[in-house]
Length: 431
View 1 (tube, rainbow, N blue to C red):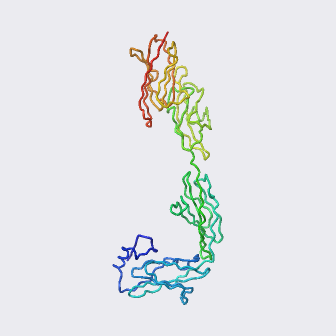
View 2: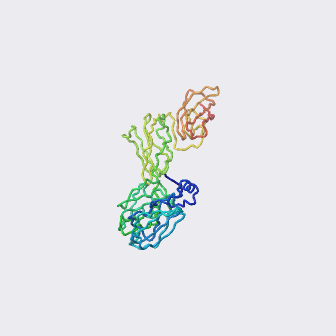
View 3: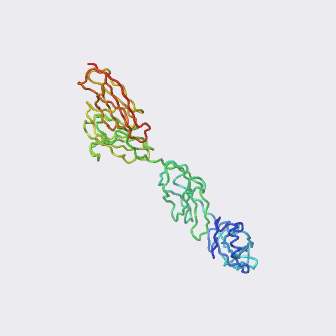
């Protein structure tokens, strides 16, 4: 027969639990005396008890109460305590003499009579408490502690093991770790989170059968873990495999979390064996490059740094430059909105420049038309990243008169609220 209960365990008061009480009443034999109780703590030959001990045992289905006796000899010729426990399965025994052997036993009682005592159980009181260890690493109020820190503390004489606790608050309600370290004064705990407060403490435990009792815990030591290394940057513009890029382009990337500065590298091969630039310490989210070769393919990537370390390199993007004489040029400027600027000069004779702004990655068309609706494309569905662009316009075949230029943009970014943009402006040719 087995009986189980959900509650505070063997130290709970089963008498006030209706379910377990009703089970006992249903299965017990009213004519049978109680069987010998089973001991829970302290077991025989227990060492390290100090000035008090809680004697505890398992419940017995046929027992209404328990008779507990404590003596300083195994024959119980000199009984120090003789008590009846009616509603619990434990009793606290105080004011123990240091460095002394004690014996205890108990028996169950009911209306049918008394059960037998169990065999005498000996426990030994210690002469003194162990000191708590001095905590070494991490020290109290330490900052920028590595998340894989090795915890260290000073050894304590006569200690055989140590109870280490790590918590997210200075109490045991939020324990992250509660472990036993044997014959060592350091260990590497679980990997912690970055930029978070933790508390830790240690208690000394005696070697087996020594004349010392476990000490109290040390005070909690507070420490704060180090900030996170930077995350990998995400490139912004030019978009990957962009063509007709300016020989003086502006390369942009999004901010990487925890970063303080960046490094940019550019090469003519995807493995970056032929570097044409490797610039570190960039505090901005962009970098203007000068005097690239026309009609040449380049590869670029970025990594982030902070005082903790560095991120891996970002993805590698490539772009191909155009002809600076008649191709699109990206300026070193930001654009927060779609915008088409007035061409300059205007009116013009032979050559003018058209400028427009793109706030998000977009497919762009730039169309020139006359008053009769005849048109030609300067830019045809070209994928452009955020920025301000300009392109020259020169067509000697056109006669004097009024013309129109229209920019049409369709964003490819899911994060952009405005998906499409179209705007037209007027310009005049005078010959």
